[in-house]
Image 1 (cartoon, rainbow, N blue to C red):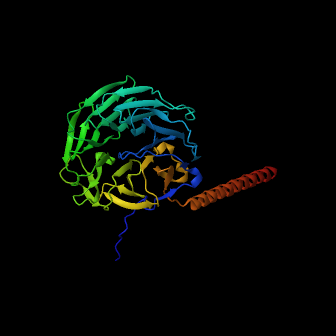
Image 2: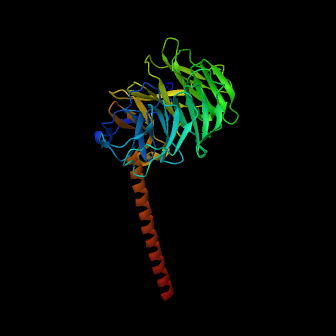
Image 3: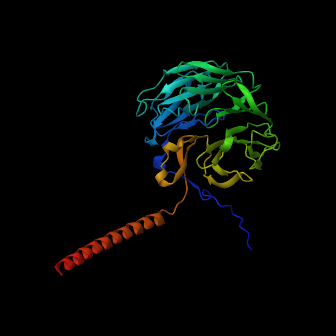
Length: 393
């Protein structure tokens, strides 16, 4: 008996493909900052990228349809006095974007329909509360006007954006620089990774620790963490020998990881993007030229390697399109916006489907329906004739 060794999965043949050159965004001077954020944020209307700017920080906002070469004089969002470190579109309003900067402030901007026609210097709201640079932003997934920011002052602040004030300030839990901070799917918990080598699950209402894990990865380099399905946590980090790792944890029993896999010896921090609809997690390394993707399931070894998209040029940042911005009729399950030094290149992840067979089967069904219709008409006609003959006799 031959044993089946290939695991069956609907996403085993997912493949990535870069769009044609004329669908890229060219001649954009992407920021040279060494900060480990995405540097790019996208939604179904706009793509925003942090760019080089003299005399302060700026980012450019382009309508998705404005592809090709971007003129050097194209207007920027340029209200910060220091370099912009992170940008994040609001999930509830596609025209609202938040930015965090080295000038210790968070600003909320409203982008007009169709994009900018002149430089935008005045934010809708300015949020002051951090004493050092603000490098992490994340909007609440379900509640309107709630924004989380984390700064180099080791403080996490939950803002009431409508009022322009801090609703919750978590300033005594983190003893060092915060590497990452994110919400779970319904916004009832916050997950942070910190330079003090601790992973923390927080209650955002009370500002207290629900669960804590010391040294999820042995190495001293930055750890990234995201919530995945069923409340589990996926982390990326480094071993003591500086090998990149990916691990899955159950916060109810934080002692040992459900799985821990070593990937390679590159030095770039792996940015994880999780898709809850498909259970696929994408790992994009800063400075890498590839995107690895894995399927997260509830069967060992829990994190199953699927494949890898590779290209020649390395990425300086990565934007991830929300599901509602994808072309699902083309079997698209994810789309990334890869930043090069001077351009932004969309990369489409597709599940191959036997479309031709599907169309043929539809045509077959239509043909059968037409035949049935003709047969019914013939039967009705014959019935009428029989009735007429019977009435004559």
